[in-house]
Image (cartoon, rainbow over all chains, first blue to last red; front, side, top):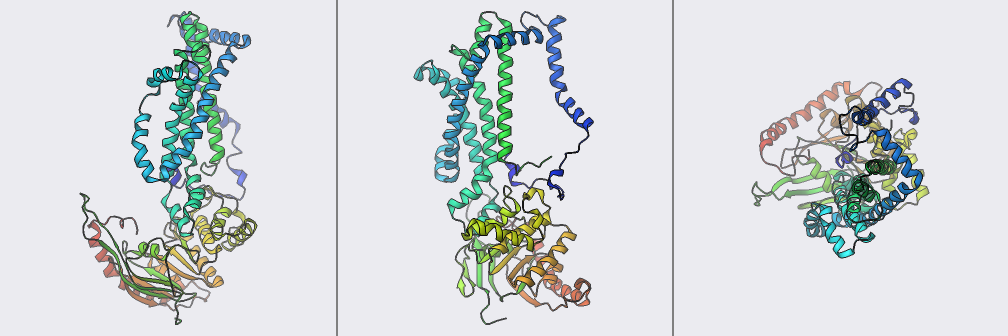
Length: 280
Length: 279
């Protein structure tokens, strides 16, 4: 990710009309593109629908997709689904926001001051490679079984991807850009603000996107262990109560939530690093 | 040559510490040794040398990005002690900020100068027009061709009005046609602005075509081997490159350079950290 920053992207031939990039694509080609992109998902969903029906798998343990969708709709109409989704989402977002607020400035600091990074990086590397879920019992012991331990776990899981990609982003700034800015007489602070920070943005966003995925991942697991609400709780308790349809409804919701979150972060990333992506 | 040259290199010497493969310090590498050169005001001087002769090291010193181990660099009689807006650097790889538009890239140097925002935009537009890119102010570097990017870089270095333009093989990454048209354009800009230009290149044709004088460097350690005055009839309507005089100058520079290139080639296999990628 970071190295696309330093490398010049393949030059696009400049035209006199900036809006001319790839607009007049024939409808047929767009249709074909959509088909190829969704074919695998459609095939998977079809398999889900048919496999239980023809007896490839026991439909008690894996009900056909249509039945799961009906169960999902029932949960949504009854309001339970939204209650669980909002419980999970608020925990994930709280932890995620705290992690971004802590990790980005800390990452910049670590990358900019060599002694700080020499001091802290080994410890951070150790933390990063400690599976967040292994610490769940510790968080529960210290912070109790309530909200605090779950949010803290999300914070922990989100911090390290952001921190390390921020450090990478700052460290991999094209030295030539730094050289050019120094030759213009910019001081360290202006150099940081005008060159290093903007150059690091794409890499920081990569970390933020990874953290977004991690937040959902660890949260659901935490909710499975001790919670009264949330999608993890829904899945786990449905399974224990043998409400298999509801269990799959929870799983489907988590998948959609993850995809939505990632999509939102990608859109944000595009907005912030438009200069890097070639339009069209 | 006036009595007070704009730029004077006086016995400039630069060495780098060298470590062997086990990290033990060895004898220092001498990149430049006793470089003496004067560049007059409004002069266009080109500098050629075999690869690895320390051309780019010299440019770093002139830009104030490094301090020479020995000797002095004087700009208008004052020693160069660090980077400054009295010198404008142009790099082979453009060094444009990819997140800024062409206009904002040109304005970058003006920010260093502390110009108010409104003046910056107006001045940047003026210099984009000077390099023929008035229609491309809002384009990002990745939307521009290599030649256009280098024009933006040149505009950036001219906009803050430096006394000397220092160019490090600025056209080396461009295709032949683009290079020739940019050479012509640079000459036109030089004639119009009267800037002092020190232009580093490894192309003999380019050196002879652009330079009023051509300085030839020796292979490592780099020294000025000779300085050749070039007197071409450039106002003629036909291409000076086809002038027989051009071929004679070209041949002279080639002769000067020939032995050095052979020397450089022989020492190419010697371990040269930190110089290997400097050109």
